[in-house]
Amino acid sequence: MLQILGKTSSINVRKVLWTCAELALPFEQEDWGSGFRATSVPEFLALNPNAMVPVIRDGDFVLWESNSIIRYLAGRYHGESLYPADPCERARCDQWIDWQASELNRAWSYAFLALVRRSPAHQDRSQIDLSCANWARHMAMIEGQLAKTGAFIAGSAFSLADIPIALSINRWLETPLQHGDLLAVEAYMARLATREAYWAYCRNGTP
Image (cartoon, rainbow, N blue to C red; front, side):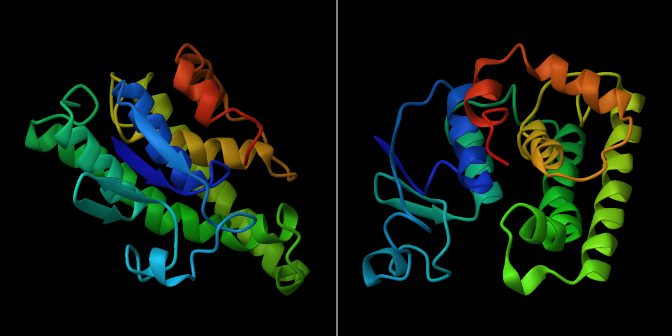
């Protein structure tokens, strides 16, 4: 059976758990990371030298990096409805997955560590304000895209890209800052609320 190593409070682990739920894929999950088993031990480093979660073991196959994992799972376990075979549709899906990991994550990092994690190293007010402004700018891009599609982030149908994007929106909503009116985002989250996995792994109170 597929094994998922990583604590369920991790946004990146929840990407993998949500994907498994959409694929109706059974798995075993082990808690690793801060507050649980340390990822710095040799046993874990042999699986991922970055000492970060999630990691999966699928038989003899080991993989790390959450976005690589969800793509692998969709490809390996007949997830064509989530990750289209058509090159153009797949590229559009990949575009938003990669954007979330590179641009959006970078925008929120400082503000999230300051306002949610209460990191003593991230309490510079000017840096918090800058991060919040950058985060809001990226959320406006999501708002614009959702207003354009009228449905999901990559088009008219739910796709693999909606998993990291929705988790990012959840993080935005759960962080104590000024959110403003994002009507397309609000409607999008309401559409996602019809999916069981959304409540289990996205809107579960964990930012």
